Image 1 (spheres, rainbow, N blue to C red):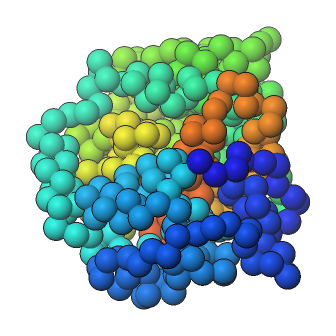
Image 2 (image 1 turned 180 degrees about the horizontal axis):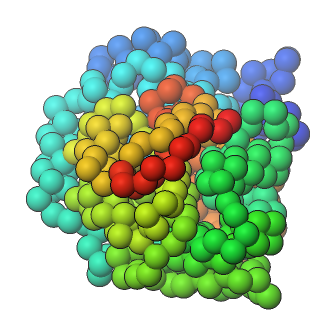
Length: 407
């Protein structure tokens, strides 16, 4: 295993995922790296991405164990992540390495065994609903209940675990505040209205809505840890934080907002989600959906993310969202600021990396490497423009209210 993750400097260009620095004089630590040569398929991909094995540029691949190649050939992205956790390889800039791989279209050029596995996974997700009512709370237990101490150090004080809005913002807190303000302006809130927050997280948005816009909020989450902290955050405000699945809700709301939750719904439930929102929204109401998206229609979720980070969900495609919402809602606005998620993820990575010395008693080195790979590879997903961040505003088709887009 490599050196324990240490605190980064303020210079994110020189601070590296494993705590080593890239200086002007020495481009890499003086380690005894084996003389390993990748198989032909891997070499072609690396050459096209301009990545060198044992190279001295920040995005180059430092291979410590040649078993890496066999794992890549058998398991694709899961093998890349697991090998990183095992310390079989490293890079000064994991985010840049993965960005370069994604830009080459590596996900469409996997070896035969990986393609067969992906096809089987895709068939499984077409046949099985992995986000039934019974499974709805799985992602809460696996991911969001990991620990409020971890998320408290990674996120800013608002505890918003979704893409910030960096137009005019210079730091994470300002970007998250700008995102909250953008959402509120798009919802055209009025005092006394009722708002449903589907996937309310740790309550940051619900608190802001109630405190600054004098509205009543019902927030729902599938995470017990989120519910506890959110209830503390909104104490004394007209906010009801519930541990519930969206499909169990009833009533009518003037506004509905869902930020960073739709990715967990699953393709088989997309229509149900929009039907539920339609039933819960007042006839003259507005519904804002904030979600990660991608252009490609994929049958199954990204295997590493599904196995280790967010089980059973899937990033929706543009076509899937359109098909699920047609006949229920009028699309008033579609806003894409996907590149802002790259900056958000890198800010989270910098904050949590600096916090590992304080968190190390609870989170071991393997978890730290897994978590950093998650953040850096997701940043790469948006930097390579494979991932998008969409905010959509909908109104009921029966509504005759006029809506003007807000930026």
